[in-house]
Length: 114
Length: 115
Image (cartoon, rainbow over all chains, first blue to last red; front, side, top):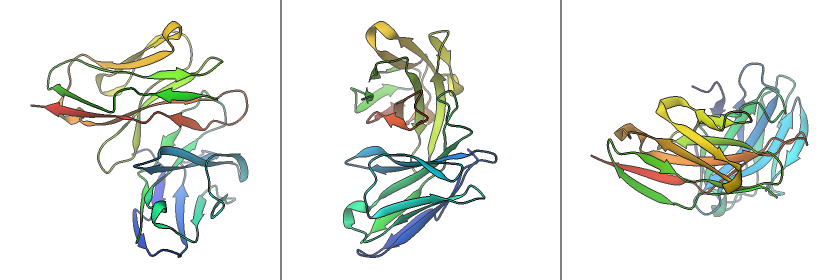
């Protein structure tokens, strides 16, 4: 158990809909990351937050957004969903932004768009 | 830009045999390198990491990896594979000095273990 908690574990929704994925980082971790894992794109970094502020953006679509709340949990919002958004979405956390710290991953949220 | 290449998409070994998974990175400065394992339906678990110092690093589950700067490689090894090692293995590199610590992953190597 990494200590990173993601909900829901599985989600099926229709095209055009909007979903929210939730992440609770490890206790004390200030940095949260979101990744998308799909068969064709592999593991892609989406976005990083540190102590409530956006720190870095990766290959995140404009239809997607995220935020980190004062209690440090994070949410990834996916809107106008398309079939191609079906993927496993990982949340990860680390203590600081220093490269020497390990990034711990949750078990992911499986999103299926039908 | 940093990148990671895992040349082998799929590897099959017999139980008890030795294992080496290849990883090559492209990064100008000193890289921070990681190996993660993903079992079916599971999240990513850290096996080991290299930041500096001894180029041979030990990890969990009997895995080790060797950092070779001259070859830009960070290959993962295990002397004797167990059936429970069947999983997908990802090599990753992280940037430094910018405050951004997003991991860049390779495409993964799927390990199959034969009885």
